[in-house]
Amino acid sequence: MKKLLFLLSVIIFIGAGCSNPPSNSTNNTNNQNNSEQSGKLNDIETNSGLTTAPEDKTEKITKDSPMLLTSANFTSGGTIPAKYTCDGQDVNPVLNISDVPENTKSLALVLEDPDAPGGVFVHWVIWNIDPKTSIIPENFKLGKAGVNDFDETRYGGPCPPSNHRYYFRLYALDNNVEIKGLLNASQLLTTIDGHILAQAELMGKYGPSK
Image (cartoon, rainbow, N blue to C red; front, side):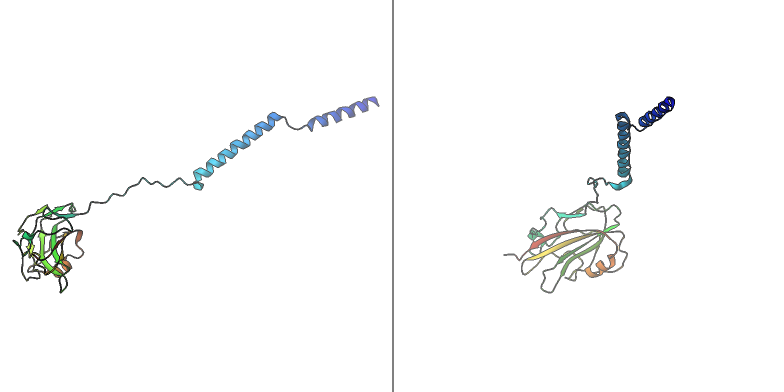
């Protein structure tokens, strides 16, 4: 009987020992493992594109500089000197050309007065100017001259009854205008339509002499 009680006591003791909770060391190890796994999951989410990097604002789009048309004789929007009008020598002012596109084959130039009483009045039409031209000097004779609204094939300077604006418009073309005969401004612009690589404009003002 004593042996039986002893065996029962041993069994009860062993059972109680097996049911003890894990040690703090074991808990700490498990917590550390869980934290590492959570960190890895966060890294995976970040790398998978669930978080987006800020947009890059440093990218710059570079464009070719626009073609420019200026004059040594007057500023844009300024007064055209009398020398270049019907009050003076009636020759064209000096024009400076820059930043012509590299693949330009020829240049064309039209001078218009949009303030004329009967509508736009054309003072100068010229095309097939060498694309390497950087200066159009006074009394320019190169290129192919068209018919202006004076019914002449030359530069006709401002000669207004009141204050008017005059627009020098320069066109860079991807071809030469291969047309025999004379063209007016409207015909020229129709011909070069679809061949314009760049355009520049210079405006000057002039009124009647006192």
